[in-house]
Length: 209
Image (cartoon, rainbow, N blue to C red; front, side, top):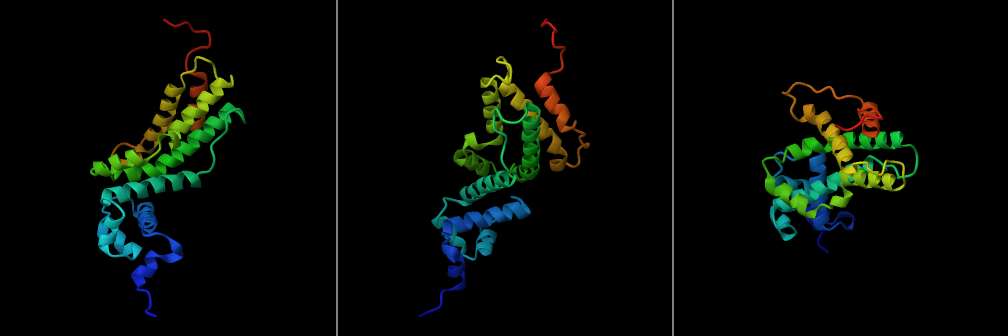
């Protein structure tokens, strides 16, 4: 019986389909080297398959990179652990955990996404296949809404605005990583942001003008 070719064997190792093999290979490349300079030839070489195999499973390179990017996001989130459950623990502790999660997520992903600024088709494909309900910002909004429904936040609390402030803090905190030529940012500590989010900056009895 003829021996299986090295490329075919690599493509079928552990019963993994070619589709999944290519996605996983591209994901590992993104995790290691980012998204800049990824080529069909390099992905195929790393996967141990012929260059043209990619087009049997994906419409183009952009679709493959988008799917690999989505897997990279999911893998990164899974490695960061679980987020708090509404009604459990303290609001301060839970918001601190959300912010620490968001900061770690942004530090891992913002540099990767910034490398795709010149590849809008990849970003468009990513938006098409990703599930908004799974994004950290949406989980944060859902958590705040649940706490409001439980009465642990004021009924008039603006949870969307609060989430925007917290996400914005995470963005600002990693900008120096993406644009090192700019002046370094000195963001306030997480505890200060949590305090502002929960208590605001106006006196408790201040009237609106």
